[in-house]
Length: 181
Figure (spheres, rainbow, N blue to C red):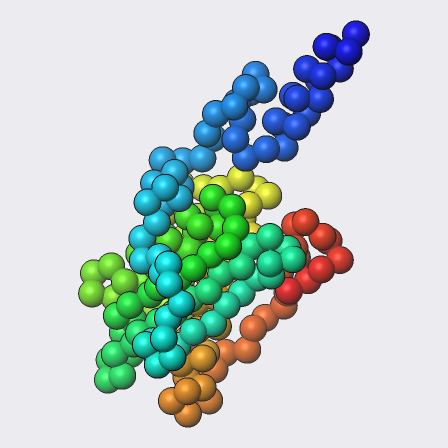
C-alpha cells in the first residue's frame, strides 16, 4: 500500500515539474532552442560590470518571486543602435533562455535601434524559442521588461526624458498571486 502511494506522489510531483515525460519519468520537454540557450547562454555576463562600462542598466522581477533579470546595454549614441546586450538572470531554464534569446534578437544583423527593440514583444521571444510551458510565459515578459527598463535608463541618462515609456501594469508572480511586480 505504501509503495503505491509513493508512486502516485512521485507522478504528482513530476506532473508539475519542468522536467518530466507523460509516463512520469524524467525527461526534457522544452524545445531544442530553449535547451540550447539554457545550456549555452549568449551574451551572459558572469562578473559585476564596472560603473560606466555600459550605457544603461536595469532589472525586472524579484528574487522573492524566483526570477530576476538584469540587462546592460551599450548603444551607439548617433544611430541609437544597440551594440551590446549583456545580461544576468537568476531563475529557471525558461528565464535564462528567454533573456539569452532576447539578447540575440536585438543584437543580430548589426543590432536593432532602440525603437526597433521596443517593438519586440514577449510573443516574439516565445516564437523564437519554439514556445514555453504556459506557467513559464512570464519569463519572456520579464526579460522584455528588463530590456525596456534599460532603454528607459539610457534615455534618462542622456536627458531625453520625453522618450521614456512608463511601465504598464504589473506582472503577477506565479509563485504568489498576491505579489505583483
